[in-house]
Length: 356
Ligand SMILES: Cc1cc2nc3c(=O)[nH]c(=O)nc-3n(C[C@H](O)[C@H](O)[C@H](O)COP(=O)(O)O)c2cc1C
Image (tube, rainbow, N blue to C red; front, side):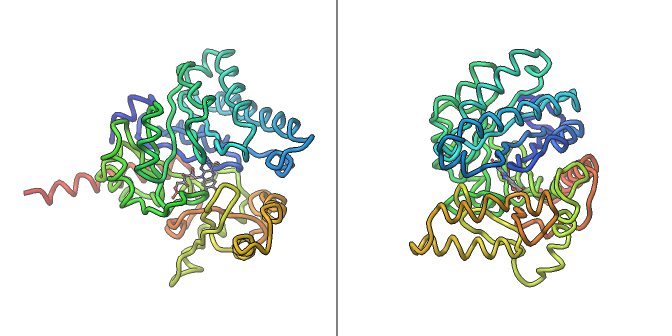
């Protein structure tokens, strides 16, 4: 049994939050995590026409409505699949995500309409953008807790000054979009813990009980894990992707299994595949002024679900962390969480033996 202040704050058994994995669907994974004692997170989806959402134009309004409907459906689905608490993430990256103010309102409305949803949908996590946007803090007026994802102690302090209830500090090892300043988790967490008074949750490269114990040793009050849940039965991803993911370590024994490219919201860590290498070349060209942002979007967005949805593992993104290489089988979410908690408890107990 491992308990910290995070368990009391969020009403959960273990101090473990599942990292959201938008635009991929986590509405089966989130209730599985919550049912297993952690806090499951609903992810921020994208509309079919991503360029309309991001580049504006007449179709932008339709794209926003489409995402709103998907998010509301996900809230209801997760509510039906668990009696435990869960959370929701939106990537608040300003002009790139003009849907966020509308989605925050829709989420709060759903909570107001249904007391059970209000009780369970407890945490809002903002990421990928400036926490000073006024529609973000609004969630606190409706009784939700607001945590903010950061990648530096500077940004953690800034978010605390804006009134967040908790900080999620994610190091450079993480899968998906990462901070522009590449601090490793080992360096980042103690700095953030020192910089703020609110509870800090550690993410980035945590995939087992040893990582969990290390995060607590660094001063975090809990962990934030996403990539570790990709090869689970409940993660909505094509079986080919899960198989590709668990063979990552075998394929890349002498080199990192992931690469970082510029992505829709800045640097993004992918498991190596043809798509990631091509995107990397294109974004390098963009930096040299030989391609435009629109060229990048037009490469990236139509391919977004080619791997996760269609199973074409070389044709679309497989975002994942450096610890993707540690997973080698597809498991039930509950089993993953039980193994991690057991291992973390054993590690923490065994460390006491070093103290004389
Ligand atoms: C497939 C994938 C999609 C992600 N999408 C989002 C997202 O929509 N919003 C967000 O805040 N973080 C997103 N992330 C980042 C995770 O929530 C989390 O910060 C990070 O993955 C933690 O590191 P780990 O992968 O080593 O566990 C994503 C990560 C992955 C692997």
